[in-house]
Every structure is written in C-alpha cells, then in structure tokens.
Length: 137
Image 1 (cartoon, helix red, strand yellow):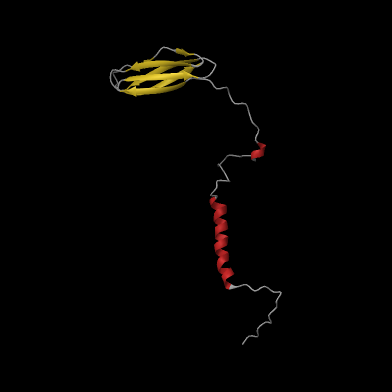
Image 2: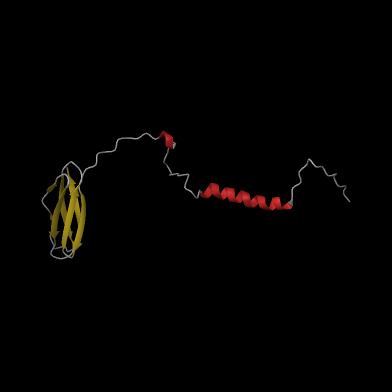
C-alpha cells in the first residue's frame, strides 16, 4: 500500500468534474473562433484591408442618367424614362425580335431633360426577345 500524502489546506484539489468540463469549454471557445457567428472577421482572398478608422473618403462621381422602366406585352413594349438629375440625358430604345425574319429596331434619340419623364414605344411583328435602353449625355 502506498503511503498517502498529508492533506494541505493551501494546495487546491481538483475534482474529477472539472476535468470533464474543460474539453467542452475548450471546444466551444474554438468553435467561436473558427465559425465567427457575428461576421466580425470579413476576409476576402487576395483583398488587403486596413482598419476601419484608416478609411479615407473619396469623391463619388456625379450621378446622372435617366431611370427607365420597361413593360413588354406580346409584340409591343413601352418604356418610361424619368430623369431626376439636373443634367439632360439622351435615351434610345432598342428592340430585338425573337423571329429571325422579324426586323430589330432602334428608336430615334429622345432628350430627357431635368425632372422630365419620356415615353418610348416599339414593337415586333411577333414576339420580342429583349428590350434595352441606351443613354448618351
């Protein structure tokens, strides 16, 4: 039989339950470091970023150009373009027809002045494949 050590009040004794809890706590801490549930760390490969306080604001380019909304029903399309900016914008409607024998069309340029809405219309003989608007300042 092994001799037992005398009990010392200054030496802490570890209970077996502490040894059972330690791996679970270490696993939880490691999971928080790896998973990052709050999205604090934003890493993009090949992207070098500085700290947030080092951000230097730059001048944004001036906004201009009309905002256009298209509606196509069957073989006809209608486009409304509204220009909320002080500079005029020249818009053109382009229509690509679905059938190979149907002629694609481009409208004449229309000037959309400041705070002005213009309406552009066009059609194909049969179905329309795509509609887009080009801008020229």
